[in-house]
Amino acid sequence: MFRAFTAIALLLAATAAGAQQSVELRWGGDAEGGAPFVEADPRNPDRVVGFDVEIAALLAEGLGRSPRFVQAGFTTLDASAARGDFDVALSGIEDSPARRSRLAITIPYYEFKEILTVRAADGARYRTLADLRGRRVATLGATLAYDLLLAAQRDVGIVPVTYEDDVHPYSDLAIGRVDAVLLDYVLAERGVRRNPGLMNQAAAVGVGYYVGILARENSALRDRMNDILRQAMKDGRLEAIFRKWKMWNDDQPALYARLTGADVGVSETVSAPDVTSGWDAAMRYLPALFRAAGITVVLSTLSMAMAVLLGAAIATGRVYGARPVQIALTSWVELIRGTPLLLQLFVIYFGLAAVIQLPAFLAALLGLGINYAAYESEIYRGALQAVPGGQLEAARTLGFTEMQTLRLVRGPQAFRFALAPMTNDFVALLKDSSLVSVITVVELTKQTSIFAANIGSWVVPGAMCAAMYLAMSLPLARYARRLESRWRR
Image (cartoon, rainbow, N blue to C red; front, side, top):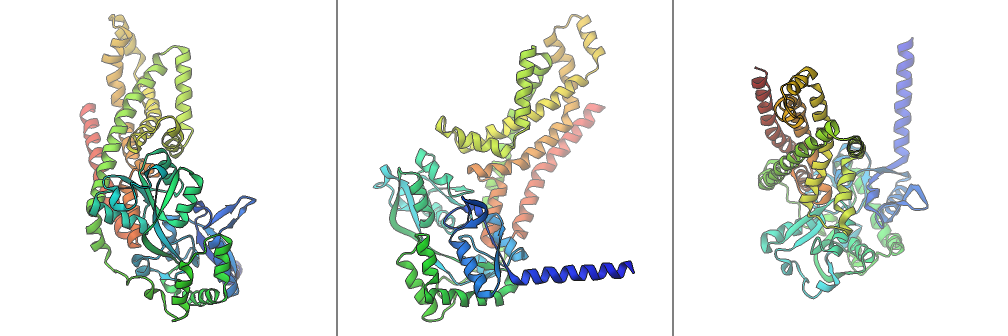
C-alpha cells in the first residue's frame, strides 16, 4: 500500500512539474552582463530589466507562456542550453558557425558592428587594427571580437588581452594598461559614457548578430520563435523595444527587410557554418594550450616559491617573535585565510590601480603567493612545534644559540614533517591558478574555456585540459613521495 501511494505521489509531482514547464518560458541569461542586455533592476533587485528581458517577454507572449529568468554565467550559456536547463538563452549572444553546428539558433534580432575604442589622445594614431601593431588590445573571450583579434595577431602582431567582463577593459584602457578595446558598439558606447577620456572610432572592424540559442532537439520551438520575431519585426514591436533602450539605428531596417521581405532564414544573413570535428579543432588550439600550460607552470612555481619563503618567515616570527609581532602576524594570517583569493586578486590588480599599476602576471604572482603563504605558515608553525622538546633542550645544553637550534636541529626535522602538506598545497595552487584569468592572465583553464566556447563543446577541450593538469601534477606528487620515503629511511 505504501509503495502504491509513493508511486501516485511521484506521478502527481511529475505531472505538476510538466504542467508548470508547459506554461512557462524558461530563458537563460547573465545578469552580470548589465544594461542594456540583462541587469538587476536598481529599484527591485529581485527582477531583471533590459532589452533581452523584453524580447523574452515578447516570445513568451507569442507562445502563450509566462517568462521565467534563469541566471547562468555567460560562458556557460551554450552548455546550459544544450543540457536543457532552460528553453532559450538571450543575453547578447552572438551568432557563430560553431553555435549553429551544435545548437538550434533563432534568426538574428539585432545587427551590431565591432568597433575600436581608444583614448581620445590616441584617436588620430590608432584608427584601425593595423595601426596597433605590437600593442595590447582588450576584448571578451569567445566572442566575434576575440576571433578578429586572433586574426590580427597573426597578420599584424597585436597582443590580445581577454577579460571576464565588459567593464574593466575600458577602465584599464583609461589608465593605460591596454592601448585599445575591440567590442560591439553597444558595449563600446557604454564604456565611453563611463570613461570620458575615451572615444570610439567610426569605422567598423566587423559585423555580427544577436540571436537566441536553444537545444538542438528544440528546433520546432525555435521555428515558432522565428515566426514570432518576424511578426514583431513587421509590426514594429522589436523596433519599439530597441528605441526604448536607445539602440535603434539604420542597420536594423535592412536586417528586418532581409528576414521578413524575402522570408529567409539565418543562413542568408551570415556565412555558412564551418563544421569541424572536436579533434580537428583541438589540433589548431594545441599550441595555444601548451603556451597557456607553460604560463600555469611558471606562475605556480614562482608563486609557491614565494609562499614557501614568506610562509617560513611568518611561522618563524610567530614561534620566536615578541608578543606584538606574534599578534600582528596572526592577524595577517587570519585576514588572508578568511577572505577569498578571488577578492584578493581583484584588490591587488584593480583596487590598487589608482596607486600602482601592476602588470597582470605580477599581480597574479603576488595574489597567489600571499594567499598561499598564509596557509604555508600554518603548516610550518605546526611542524616547528611538532619537534620534540627534548631535542631542543639538548641543543641548548650543548650551547647552541636559538638560531643554530632552528637551523641545525628544529628546521630540518620540521621540513620533513611539512613536506607532504607542502606538496598538497603546490598541487592545489596549480589548480587555483585558474582564478587569475579574472585579471587577464590567460592560463590553461582560461584558454580551454575559450577553446570550448568557440567549438561549442567541452568534451575534447575538457579532456585535453585534464590531461595537461595531470601531466603537471602527477610527477610532482611522485617525486615528493620518493623524497619522503628516502628521508624516512
